Image (cartoon, rainbow, N blue to C red):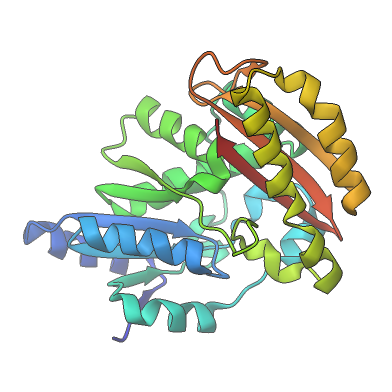
Length: 280
């Protein structure tokens, strides 16, 4: 199937208006491209639930606090289109930066509280950029349901709060993290790992698994933290930003899982920042 690639808002809105007039339910899968099986699982979820599916492809400069990270982010539109082709996606919404942020653009969407911990504490301004671009993507596409992966769980919760607070008429649906056979969470950034780093990378998943099992067995998360971080550094990680347990709803730091919780980890390996989380 040939995917229609749309790059201008007027054409996108005209297409969606036609679907709406026919009573179609519209699903949206926001991405920054460099698609992998995790993204495709979101597409499959959208296809199963909706009549029409839009995949968005936009590398958002406003969520990168490190210019080198933005420059290194993979841009693979041609192969992304090929990966989407078997999934009967109706539209690939792939605007340019000038279409998304025209001259004079001066608005920022900022969610309070949730972005101040975990990745937000290490990437200033990142989640303002995420909230701003996702707000725009959701209003541009007019979807009924938007599908996000749980690997970026903090992002998922921020988007949920943003959509609720702004009364956006869209359901934000989280979908399970997909993993490689050795446990590494699928991510576009994995393509930047060299062979040595790729062999080391699954240690983050193993550390989170040990923390989750430990707290389920009655251990305090704070007691498990230091030895697990030491293990990651010994395995070859360059730095560990965090390895901790937090509540699912408000991301409050927890020592015991007295309410629904997850263990979260972020670490840098060979110049690539990896993140992951597991439900407790």
